[in-house]
Length: 148
Image (cartoon, helix red, strand yellow):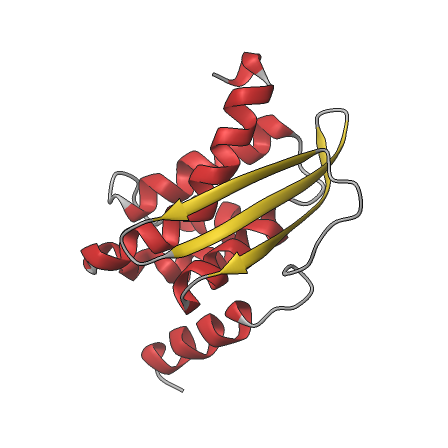
């Protein structure tokens, strides 16, 4: 299997991940993320235990890149505290903006989400890939002042 096929398969698998695309019962935070460029719209939901993300999910509509990126992010942040989640957000957005080099440390941090690195070469899709990450950053920045 070549790299392009692997990327496509992973994108399709994650974009259809129903485990992360659902309503949470009694979420602590809900935040709407909208990309007016293409119409992607998600509501990110977090269930917190103090500063730890106990559970996360999303509902809404978007392209395969948006849905896959959101699902990958959710898998990464579950069980993490808000400081770790904020750091992951900064790394991912930095990778997409080509400000952070993809190396072993980044791969260890972001896992499968590094497959979205090539989105940075498609300017029309960058906003799709970072939508959920910006939405998460908004939740953290607006509710946990020490992370600003």
